[in-house]
Length: 147
Image 1 (tube, helix red, strand yellow):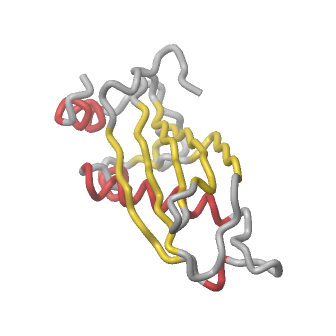
Image 2 (spheres, rainbow, N blue to C red; image 1 turned 90 degrees about the vertical axis):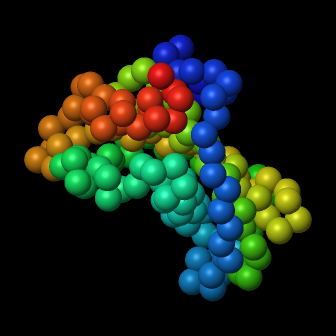
Image 3 (cartoon, rainbow, N blue to C red; image 1 turned 135 degrees about the vertical axis):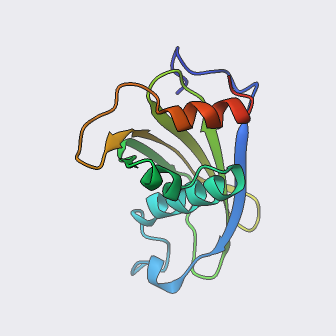
């Protein structure tokens, strides 16, 4: 999944967080409904942002939104109500004006249950696509040792 303009994993920013699978996330088969995995990805991105100083609030303060334009999700094993879910979120650096995150989700037996990736772009709050990386993101990348 690595594109030509993305850095190799030599500099790897990541976060690991845990949540308990909630009853309302399961379906009639008593397993997590497939659509909730994207919510888990978002839980991972928010935890990543808190740890690494790049939250959704930072984007709002800079008058930007970061909509997802691509997402992939590969289901390996089911998750059930009450299980402890570990979400590993990995930032993939890119020279392009986008944010790329990869995800690995593990059940409480530490078996991988899902992998995925999201791509987000920078947009003004008026809906204009930004074709360059915002200055505050460049500053963040510098602080994190990515550039």
